[in-house]
Amino acid sequence: MIKDVITKKLRLIPDERGRLMEILRTDDPDYLPVAQIYMTTNYPGVVKAWHFHKHQTDQMTCVKGMVKVALYDAREDSPTKGEVNEFFVGEYNPMLIVIPAGVYHGWKCVSDHESVVVNCPTKLYDYKNPDEHRAEYNDPKIPYNWDIVYK
View 1 (cartoon, rainbow, N blue to C red):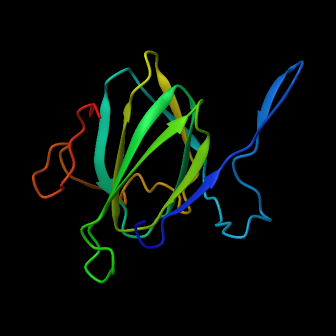
View 2: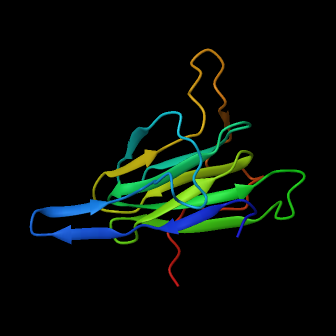
């Protein structure tokens, strides 16, 4: 696992009315403050990658559909520099992923319908000076292929 990345299996609580899923709680041992909450969607097969933040930690999950989430540690001072992590997150595997500053990340919708990702970053988005540092989804410096892998 990439240093400082945290994953937490999320628990679904179903009853005859529907279901409830807690994403973040202030009494979680690794709780980080939330500056804002937003959602983003992906259509099937769409890749949203790569980007990282210098100052912000992302706390994300997929609440509808399924996404393949990939992380790449580009931090110079990290003992896991160069490592890649991959997670399948969504309706069939509810999970929170905490992505520290400096770690490239992105996701691809792997369900046959639109996916909905919720992110709870630790910093507010600054429209005039965004903490967004991007690379193309197929950047050769990042050793990851977004294609479906048949094993």
